[in-house]
Image (cartoon, rainbow, N blue to C red; front, side, top):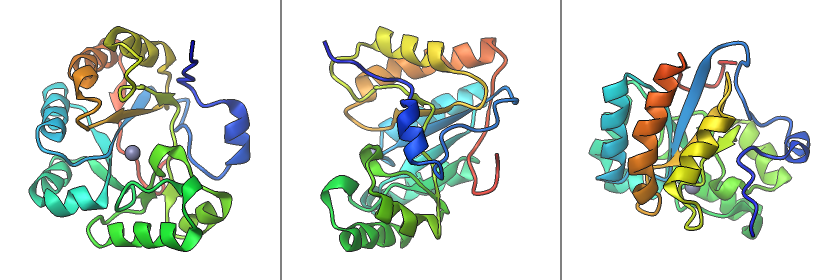
Length: 209
Ligand SMILES: [Zn+2]
């Protein structure tokens, strides 16, 4: 039986204290994030649901997807959401040299205007991170939905996010093909949960707490 830590272990946070894991715990606000878009159908679904519930989110975009789906990228911004850099080719920091990693981030900068960054797979070396931190705020998470994982059912996924959500939570979902079978069920139910429990949603920025 595999364990899925919805919340990142404390030791990881100690190791990376300069990363952002959670926002202001005194405000009843949740920070929704969607990784790996923009992709037609999936990102559109998310945008429509967010609009329906009057919620805002931050989209960590893959550069190559932005190049292919410019209109969708523009729509994200036009609808008042924030965007972040998630590298150009979804590169794994633990398996790439620093120069190659930074090059991929830089390539994504050509199409993504943001000072927020999230490392793909949450995997980044300390030296890579130190370089990125000169220019970016690195956003990790407080709640990981596992919407991308085959062994997690939609019910389990919803239950995970609902039980772990607390004021200031940064929650990770994916606007991707892989996550969609779960996301299409979980997202509307989760947004309803937020509404019923008086949580508002915020967009991430370089300065906000
Ligand atoms: Zn990703």
